[in-house]
Length: 240
Image (cartoon, rainbow, N blue to C red; front, side, top):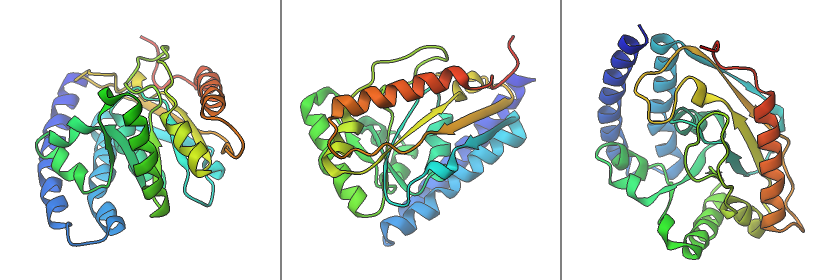
């Protein structure tokens, strides 16, 4: 049954991707925030389909921790679910993504209109400078910035190396950091076609003020909070 549901979902998501890539292209004349609202209709529908077709629901804890001003969101990265859902669970965000994603047919075309921060991850320190320069501009435009500090998706129960890019941006601009833990990978696994029903828990931590703190200190604080919170999250689905 999970396979059949996953096939139906994949077909519907593909059709939506093609349709909203056209919406994105026609949104070009509008402001960045108007384009964002138009294009992220896709995100709302995909997560709705995940609920009705796949049986994947979600709950959000800690919404009251979101600051009133633009912030840098540093989140756990386990699956494709959060790359879709976080674009409407938070205020308008500019996500830090791999530059090559913009070359993906349809998906990449639409993503260009969402004002992402596309970086060349192989550029080393130059990539960090790109995050700070572009991220500062986005924050000034009232966009939040979304960074997955582990850089790539990790399986449930695993931990990647936390990079300092997002914390460096926050330290340079004085923007607060919002740490986020979640367990989406338990029902929407990395690189897996078949998804399974369950309830994802997204936990938003208290905002971390960055004044007077180094990027290294902030990264350690974020890592400690996220990994501690990950251990406290309830299972997203019954153990099999």
